[in-house]
Length: 173
Image: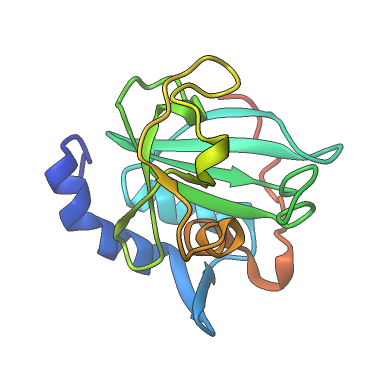
């Protein structure tokens, strides 16, 4: 199944998220505790393993899987700083289809229910139509009643017990 049109992505996204996530209170976590089982599930869903690069704390990686307009990023050790520092997680994004795995090609995130959500969130005084790398901002929510952490918890999904066993080594494809 190739997720090559926005309408098809929106129709299939709830099934995709059910295949990848399980409820954890009011939030969702990844169903898998190893990179091998995550990768096997993504292969069954016709995703391709497209890039692995160093990211986050020392030894961490950011691994990309794509299927048409959908890119899934897995951060094996989480972010280097911030609320998801040292917390492995995935995010699922609807992209422009440029195919270069760049985070700025996301046009929206997909939340745990499979609904499109803002790509990012900011307060009015910090909004800029271009980001820090001079890329155009897309689908940014100007902060209202939802805090940045609450938004992030709905669009970034941790692994059980905030850890993942990296049993593939995720070499460069």
